[in-house]
Length: 100
Length: 184
Image (cartoon, each protein chain N blue to C red):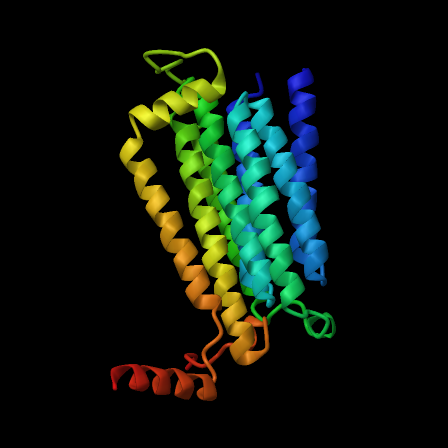
């Protein structure tokens, strides 16, 4: 049995990489991919504790997280398509209509 | 020992391909590294004896979400982006924020290192991971499950509405003429 903190370290690493990706990249598709990465990190934590406590609720919540990730990807990619038809760019730096 | 080796193999692949994901210029390469990360996270789930979740991860993430990403990359020509700057100007701030985040999470983990887990807390343990997940999902979490299905329905409608092309002026005039004719 691998100690639970190994899994938590993996979760921290993936979540932080996702945060860095969201904050630094300019391509909106890669930003969405980084968000998926962060959701995966959360899932690892949930399932690690579910396995540690022999309680399956964590896995049920991981299923809900996956549902939310799927919905987010569908709507997010729809927004990307709408953005591209209107402004012909996927670069978030050029979407600055509401920027002061 | 074997479990540790399996876990570290999958974890290393996951972290390395995640780092490659956020540093590649080409979005298609990022999608491929996202596939590698997701598959190795599925392997980590297997090492946690969450077989059902591992299958769901492969089917939903790799088979569904990732294919959606690749489709959008195909629809949106990214050849112009290859010549553009990859990162925005807040890179240093972002790294500082990430360092603070790591320090915070690491401190939280370190300060909780002595907490003893109270052992198994489940009242009933059902043989078979999928059966157990299914029983708990449909008995204790039926309402959240139904709400999740409504959320997916809303997401489908939202995605269709968002990616629909706005009607051109000519089309709009035609539709208006038709409805006027029908009114007469």
